Amino acid sequence: MDDVLKSVGFCAVYVLLMSLSCVLCDSLEVEEKESIDRFKLEGKIDLFLAGKNKDWVVHARVFVDGGDYVGLLKSDGSFVISGLPSGSYVVEVSHPAFIFDAVRVDITSKGKIRARKVNYLQPNQVKSQTYPLFIQERQKTKYFQDREQWKVIDFLFNPMVKLNVVESNRLLI
Image 1: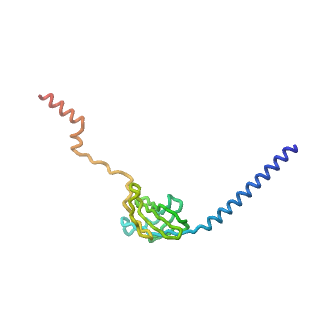
Image 2: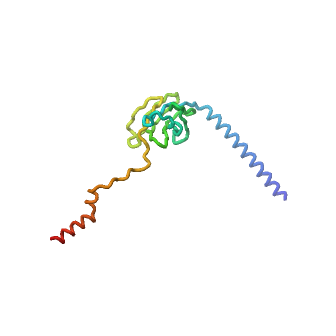
């Protein structure tokens, strides 16, 4: 019985020490994170295809690095994403009806911001972009393909039709 009480006491002390070390480690991480300089990313999105209809702003979101940081648009299409540490980020605009080009933004430790369009096929090809960002839609999203129209040529080049024409000519000869 005495051994059981000792083992329970050791377990309780162990759990207490582990929880205390976790609390201390978390407080150290918070202090480290607060010492890092944070910057803000600004830009504007404009839709020419939407015309005067401003309802598109409600459905649009700005994602930095695939959703690590998210920004919402104001009624005029502008956005501000605060709290970014220095580094390189990919900024994407998500909207259900329109497709936008992605932009790579580099923030130096001194706060200088450089923007360029992302080209996944040719990464060495760099197209600079102005800052604050100005992003326009590339095209409307197509969820369905248009149905291919029936043509007489498709009927004539059908292998079964060709075979029937050859066989009918053979019977006539």
